[in-house]
Image 1 (cartoon, rainbow, N blue to C red):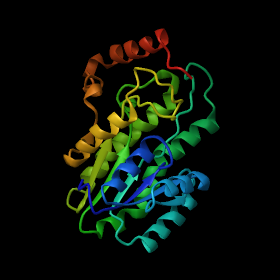
Image 2 (cartoon, rainbow, N blue to C red):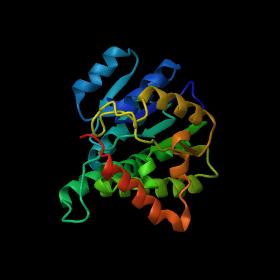
Image 3 (cartoon, rainbow, N blue to C red):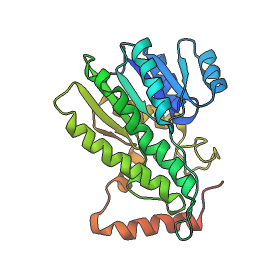
Image 4 (cartoon, one colour):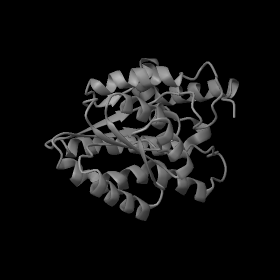
Length: 252
């Protein structure tokens, strides 16, 4: 994507990767609007970075998405970049009974939220001289973590959706990029300072370079081996990955 002179809407923009992207893109001269469920956090980011604006949005609520999309089209006619970043990552255990309500929250937030929001804005984006849709998935889209099975599945589904959407928009001025983060030290689960987690500032720096390259998929070099899913060796890879976490679990 072009990294300057955009009008950008970022969901989940009050913390973690979303906030860091918002701050970096704002510093580069873009108009940035962030979304989140809590108005107090939106106000906090806006106060810390004058010029960033916030809109309260429950990304899991289809009616709220329609409301906010209409507001964006009305108030920000030059909107040309959508960053579907909001996500939740509850733990589950697929070896036993999985809580249905929790699974629905994950899918409504991580998968249907981006699908609904993109659908509500895509005709507006097509009308811009140049536009970009960015989906924030995860390395767990390729190598799932067994303790967050529904989360991993939601990200795999969003990756698949991005592939289809990119093809269907091939003859338009809208490009689709995907960010596939590794384990980044944010509060998605719990900010812990674990040395296995990539520092947020390092992740953002590498990601911005990738976004500028116009590559369809942006991932940091550290996860290349996991991204290069080894075909029929996938089962052994996923088993070994999860066994390593059993032996040295992520702090929670």
